Length: 121
Image (cartoon, helix red, strand yellow):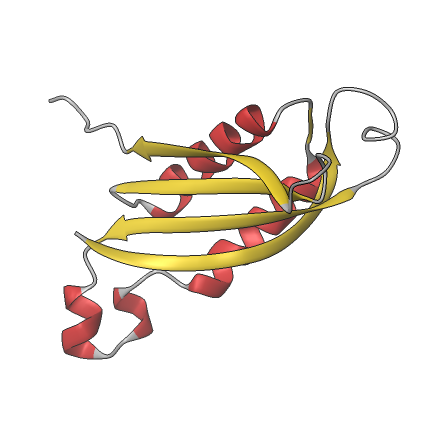
């Protein structure tokens, strides 16, 4: 399966369990791998035959800005459900990281993999 990759998208939102995390938005780094068939776009060279990277990035940043989850796990699941529904992709991986949040680390975070659910006739 082909992939569209978005790396280190910066999105800002309220995420965390206690103050000061819940007091003000913080910057998250989001990495998305979308599994989809890119062959049509490769043949036609037409943007209508692929998924707009810009649209995905804007949708994710907007959703992060309007949510206030306690856990990265819940945010990742929400973003996965939104992207699967909105863009009709086969599957995706989302990694969300908090930079310099835990002492002696550059980033901490979660990564999830989700597949589209096939409709049963």
